[in-house]
Length: 531
Image (tube, rainbow, N blue to C red; front, side, top):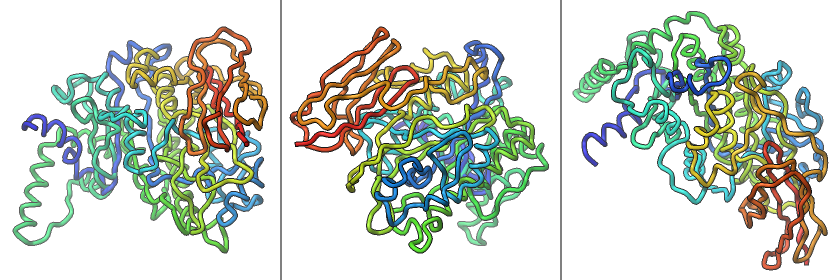
């Protein structure tokens, strides 16, 4: 690697802003170029912001979002960690599904019409390695692809193809992307250079805006460290704009104490309200790899996972209240995600093991509130290998936000994803109608309106029957590990009802899932192969 390549790739990733925000990591991305404005439809939306909250470690979605309508199956699958049915928090406008009792803050956001639950988000052929699964989510690739750029980095590279040459400038004086709490990650990596910058800690942020630095040891090495810090601050092109934005905000709501996620989000709110044009911020909150002692045996509503969920819920609620107080609430939408969920069945160590699909939340005054999808299918007699079957592909969440929140033309959005993913991207009802052009919510369906099979149970073959209102139909057959066994249908249809045979002669007995997708409509059908 030559010196130029080293500087382009290494400096934005780790050195660009090590002193900025008191030890916390935040990412921010901007979308205010004339090109984006030209692509926008309707009202000009140059000030929209996306805040990504990463729940690192693989969050247990079944104990965060409890399937009350299928409570007996849920309880049977995880008797040692199951949340008591009478303690589950209800969700306004949603029946048969509830929240962990520690998530009162998020429950209030649902009541206020500022939260959206998306059930069973994942991808085909899930990977259960923390590192690889995180890369897949950040790059928006398939699990069998190695993609070395991030979905947001590709977007920003499209917006600002010459970055970092000529930046900052009069049109874009602010960082394109900011991460608080660590070095920049794959999410903001462009094809050749990282488009983001890092604020490594909350302490460093407050040092920056106050013009101070952490004390250094009185040693030769300490003197060298002090000199490096001084040189670094002097060469920071974006330091002054960040300092000015932060200093323009002098009052905020009270955030919960001893909560690092709340500390990070408080900084994000301050920078947004301070006038930065940065478009996307990313913060990370870890600790969700709960293989053991996830809950207290004496009271399963308490314990490690409960504490984590409370901190997430309380931090997001305070952040949303702060955005309202600062008069920037309708500029911001937030999103949570984790690199994977956990298995349906709990383990004997009062914990859960790496799994597949999991719920996501969107929050903000512009989200289309309620729940998208249905409760996950839970077998009557789950095994340790059973996973939550995917309902929504996470790439559809990304593409919908780019199209419906950032108002980017759909053809441009599709160009930002690997070509073999485009046919699977859905425009989902995540954002309120009118923010850009809106989307039509999926038609309400009950039971097997969209896809069914007969016979069920079956022995070797079963006939799959599905209905479509026209357009592209995509049907995948998945096993309980979340692996795609077969793509049954992947083509354009005219409106009508169709049948196709699924031959499972070579497959072992057990449960399989037929995942149907047609426009914004989707359905998951459980099928049982017997001897």
